[in-house]
Amino acid sequence: TVEMLREVKTVVDTNKIAVHFHDTYGQALANIYASIAEEGISVVDSSVAGLGGCPYAKGASGNVATEDVIYMLHGMGIQTGIDLNKLIEAGTYISDVLGRPTRSKVALALSAKGDNG
View 1 (tube, one colour):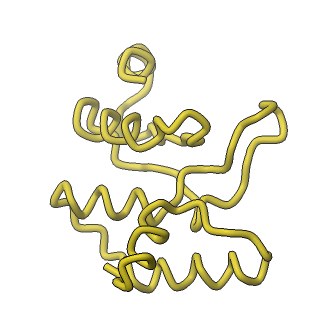
View 2: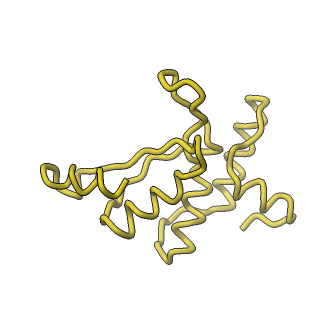
């Protein structure tokens, strides 16, 4: 990820770059962290409850869960203006409506603890 971003940054201003990762191999948060901490990227695509996917990549799982990204950013001391508890509630709601479990590791962990943030 870092190598690719460095190459892109030779022709595109950093403030015009956004990153988008699926979590198929469990590397989305690591790639987002590297994008932010090492390359100064400030725009990250994600999806509440990890909804979505990629119809073009066989076996690709959903998008990285916004709840997981926000939890990491808050842990890094980055203020997002996003209320993690409300975000988890929204993810739980839409997952229930769709009849599928959330893909957010943070939402699952906090609900197992009986804590939402």
